[in-house]
Amino acid sequence: MTQKIMYLDDLAKYIGKSVRTAQRWVAKGLLPPPNKTEGRSGFWIESEVEKWLNGDYKKKCDRLLKNGTV
Image (cartoon, helix red, strand yellow):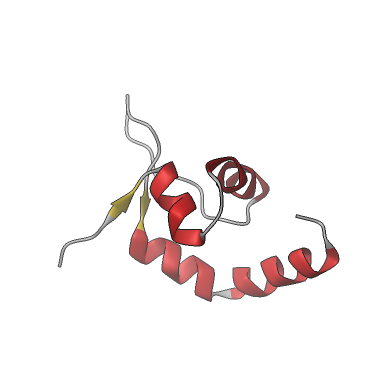
């Protein structure tokens, strides 16, 4: 099974937000932290992002969005 790797711009498109918003959400813990290899920029694995978005995180994020915290 091939795993799709996403970079920051791909992640932003995947969640339907700007790159800057994706950066802020990662910094706030609303999205998973990037995987990093030495000398490379961070990347995400699509299946991991999907699991993250469908887990308890989603409840926390929805609550923060509803309160206008994000």
